[in-house]
Length: 567
Image 1 (tube, rainbow, N blue to C red):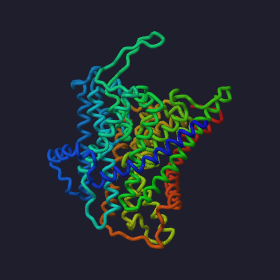
Image 2 (cartoon, rainbow, N blue to C red; image 1 turned 90 degrees about the vertical axis):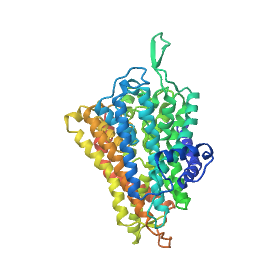
Image 3 (cartoon, rainbow, N blue to C red; image 1 turned 120 degrees about the vertical axis):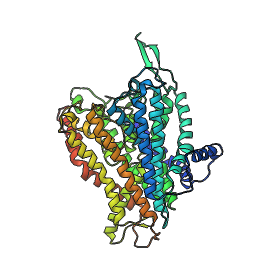
Image 4 (tube, rainbow, N blue to C red; image 1 turned 180 degrees about the horizontal axis):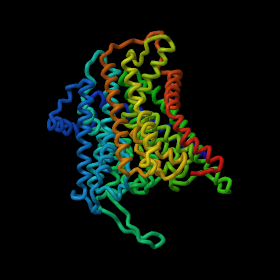
């Protein structure tokens, strides 16, 4: 470990916290439907869309209507994407004459991008045409991100409103987020990436001569535009197979830092937005503080393990940290930090191969996903996932003091707790259930590259990534088979919408309740005690649920490694 490495981690954390307030303030303006400076230019576009679609933004919806409209929208997008990929071979903007995507692969990809997972069983440069990259994939990077933020807004209204039967309008929320936040920010972001050396062209490829005198063909395409929303929307789907390890996606240390910050920016801002929505910004800062404690712990462990390197190699006289699977232009610290950032959020972009991490270094990204990626988390999904744990924590605190639990002025009763537990239970149900199936069936066992606990971790990581809507892979699993495409599709769909619907039901239940002022007997939910309880509940729930699977995978792998056995 080095001073420079720790400085990078602390600098990144400080910049994330600094971004929370300005980003959160702009999000709060969109949450309230207030006019922003961008309305002068984009306001007519917004209202033109409403007229064209027959949407009345002032007409609010119950939680059931909000959920129904959201689900129908996602279903239509899934069918659209599936059809486009299946007919890719006969559609324009296909300069490399790529064939149609197979049925199970097209279904998996459509569900992956609609659910904000962006799981990629394929190599983008050799599978997807420019039209597919732009229309079938990049469009979902915007819409799935906007959907996540819209759900967060709806849940905020549940906490903030009093005796209300509605939680907003899904179409208005989604439109405002896309038009006033994601599109303008990504336009500026893409220009920065182009200036940094990221391609943005409809050309197919370019032939170059390497320093060794070898001719090489480099695939080009509309990379910068996809890269911008891939990061800002915590999508993670790369234009190239190597993702953000590819120099055309992430060419310099500066782009690497900006990409990591853009992954966290909106998620951190939503914590401040939540505090503003409930009339107490300290509530938002308390949530962000708990997130940052978990994040720093994970980043510290991963960096420590990767800097320590492989003891087997040390015994052979090879000193230094673990550089396998990492880019020299980033090094150990930036690679370890990126891995924690992308899995603490539901991004899935990678600048190093997690399969090549040390056992415990790779365990932290895995555990981040198993917690539901609530440590800042994906755009919208992180904050509403974290609030589910907050409801569980305040319920336990209420049992401790012998009072009906309250959170931000709302009594938390049996209905809300049951719904929160139902949503949280989705993670172990899919992750552990599908891992168990794949670990015993021949079709599942044909996937891992490695044997023993490392191979088991490859399977466990895949379902943790799919259910958590992350999309990163352990890189050793051959997942482009009908078996894995099918099971991972189910895991991604359940992991996304079986959490969203209970969250919306909680929003509807809370919005209908009266406001309950704090009293001397109320459990405080802004101080160090509350932050510690939140962190403890998250770790205990995650630890009790997933520790056995971690013991069979990365922990066993680590113990074998220090005894001289590698897989």
